[in-house]
Image (cartoon, rainbow, N blue to C red; front, side):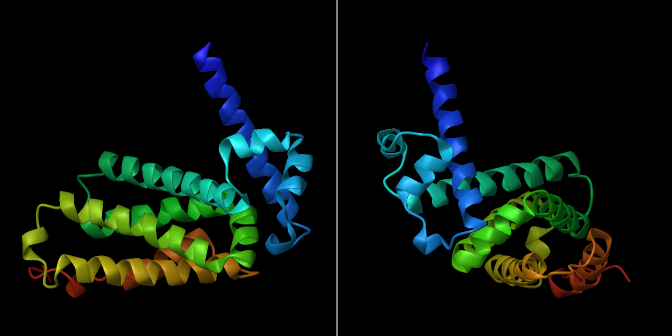
Length: 197
């Protein structure tokens, strides 16, 4: 019985997220209210308030779901490919982000249009976790030229800025082009003491 209730909660939250996304296609976030979301989702207002305090909490829930999905996908891939060198792991995470962003571009763009800070925070937080994870597992981390917190901030900031530009672009570079750009940008000479020439 409890499992069915859990599934109902998941279904209700999904319907509310989809309703908010749909409303963002025609209405600015500021003008959307809880009643609009409930009507679009065909959910009672009391049901909405059983799960969320307001539309901001619903939006945060959507973004948290994106963050978890992207992080788990990137980290699972990193674990599978753990024998690769660090640069390849970075490129693999970026590849996973591009796949995820391509699949969810419409929703991410709609949120970005109304709340750039939230999307920026989503990308930054996810990449910070991913990069910290990779560095923590790297057997050469004691040989880095730069402090780990500097590396994490550097890579996270660059990837986030480029990711936002990619989401906002009406004609974004292809996945292959993006990976080629990062192939050049992610230079081990920036962070590793022992570089084999």
